[in-house]
Image 1 (tube, rainbow, N blue to C red):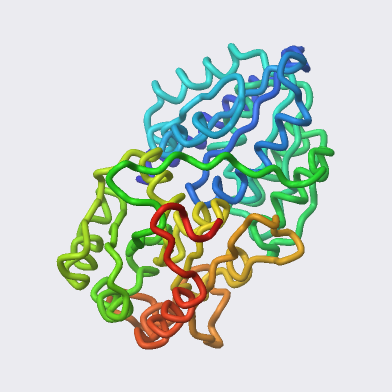
Image 2 (image 1 turned 90 degrees about the horizontal axis):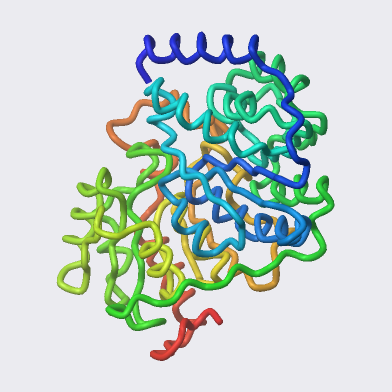
Length: 383
């Protein structure tokens, strides 16, 4: 974000803070805000389902303000009463759009506000909380590792009457569990309903390859290595990614040969979810599709780096529902792990903790996983 936009957004936040007041809205109208990436939403999905049990239909109006990048998936899978799709970057840079979305949130008259994102941003989630003016607010307690921690602390006491303390190093799903538990929403973790398969891809008979990364190019394994890693597998490969990841997707597809179909920017969020939910296996970097596959019961392998060890991999078994197929991480142990992706080692394009993962090791792990998952041409073999 440009420095001018950041200054303008901060000034706008200060004005909103000075004008903030509780509006005495209806406590039966509940708004949850979730604006992070697809992977974080995928981990949160079962706990979002649990909210419907806590706030039953007919007694409560349950709304979700969702990242527009994946809001279609939420609308298809969650039995909420209302969805507000918010374009995050546009909200942070376009004042007119921000004010329009603030007015929409305020018009909802939500009496209860839920902020289940651990690393919420004051200029985003807290800004929307100021617009909502809800009487009751629930959020994670701001810790030292949070972005803009001082600003976040100055807002949280005013906005959120209930704050959930949680260790930063916990896995994201464990944090989600802790928040749901604080609300009283955990009586078992509901299973999300699986999206239907795509007609052009036979369930259980293809691999999904995800050469991009939620952390950007520096955290993406060299795409041409996927051809070497999958040399022993003859399954068709759907190589998926966003339009911005097209160079990575095309390079990976070329390395896989004729059995690969590059799909960068060609799938909607819902089509992407359908593709993942019925794959034989999903392989890729530390990216959101791996986590969605896990909650769908699809085996997955992720080439991981050392930026945030423990936050996403390995999964905590004690907080994993029985239907989850725990992803298998493949990485290298380096003494610099835990750098939060602020790498201090010299590298050209890819961080050493990702670049040094050998293709032969990934190939061996994939062969082992495929060997214990016999092919079933009629249904996803993970179920």
